[in-house]
Length: 105
Image (cartoon, rainbow, N blue to C red):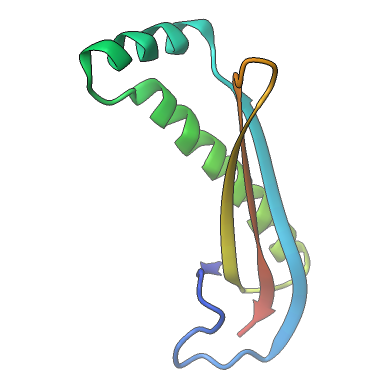
């Protein structure tokens, strides 16, 4: 499945606009990641635990969107937008939402 943030695919005419497709993932951060992140906040450096969680959530959201587009027999998704939010009482959850237009090219 070809996925792009642009509204066209250069050199590939769009034959049919199938429709809007989305994917969402909400994941929680755990105590260990929070603890290591607080240490990193003091000493500096990257918080690889959170980065891993973010990558996993993004992959889940994209997987859902691709699955939906494939169900519509689309072979590409254009105009993709990625949004990130934190949720929960103490911002302990991460939400990743992706959306785009499924097309046949």
